[in-house]
Length: 345
Ligand SMILES: NC(=O)c1ccc[n+]([C@@H]2O[C@H](COP(=O)([O-])OP(=O)(O)OC[C@H]3O[C@@H](n4cnc5c(N)ncnc54)[C@H](O)[C@@H]3O)[C@@H](O)[C@H]2O)c1
Image 1 (tube, rainbow, N blue to C red):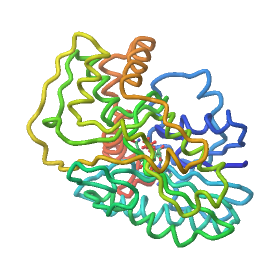
Image 2 (image 1 turned 90 degrees about the horizontal axis):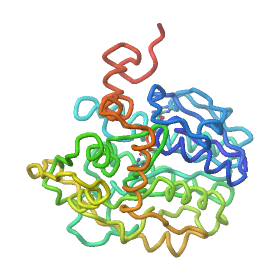
Image 3 (image 1 turned 45 degrees about the horizontal axis):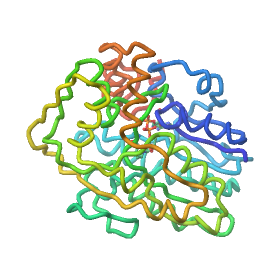
Image 4 (image 1 turned 90 degrees about the vertical axis):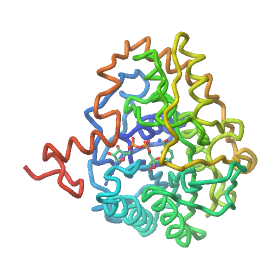
């Protein structure tokens, strides 16, 4: 298939494009390139296979940009609450309105498949029970609220000629050239490696399902290739039920993979997000999908990567690997404007 992947310059997209190419697809990218100056490692598989990419802001796309594609896998968004309380409207403009614009444009252009990278963060706060795709959503942030709105607004576009599927990914971990150290397992592993100390920012009690980046890529491949009737208008949580952990359990797993580390807890967090998620549907109803990774194996893989590339504290703390730091830097230095468009200088 000829596939347009948005967000190919980001954490998941940088792994997904070569993953789909290796499965025999013709892949093109679309990204505005906010994190391009961060590259954690050069990869003999990933980098040379980088797709031909259209450097565009998704808020400006038109149906003409999607002509000739069989499928769109849409990842490009602000991937956490970057400007926080101050300007949540940018998150709504890009993540909600921008994503709906992409889906409509793709449909109008005759694209037959649309795969959306949603998130388990839509569940927000649960009381510890396993939440499946039918559980009520309870978004706690603008980011999560946008995921709910995109699902709500894109679902009615589904019909016999345009199939849509919503993949609610657990929090990802694992290596990517466009690394993120602002997500839990990657962060704790890098703390363990560079500081020999895993300082949790909370008391470690919140529940988080986590999933390896390759399992996400595989779910996306399966969603693109599945018979339309198996997936059209469906939501799938992406992960494995056994991979729900309290943050302190993740810290203990990381400490096991990085011997000699001290683990410390912080005060109870004001961030009350905590959710435990059921992943039975994807295991049984997404043809071909099987989650293969565990947190333990993922932590060992990251240790091997950090050893190989000699990860330094400076690299770990480099702004481009923490999404919020990079966006603030680009704004402070006038490289992007207040709305996160590249400045015309
Ligand atoms: N990483 C996770 O743990 C996780 C979990 C659940 C869901 N997701 C979702 O998966 C998707 C990808 O996540 P990621 O971790 O790779 O994020 P990321 O921040 O690493 O990548 C997002 C990419 O989108 C691009 N982008 C942002 N705004 C854009 C715009 N206006 N126009 C064009 N491009 C734009 C950025 O330049 C970046 O390359 C996101 O939608 C995210 O919400 C991620």
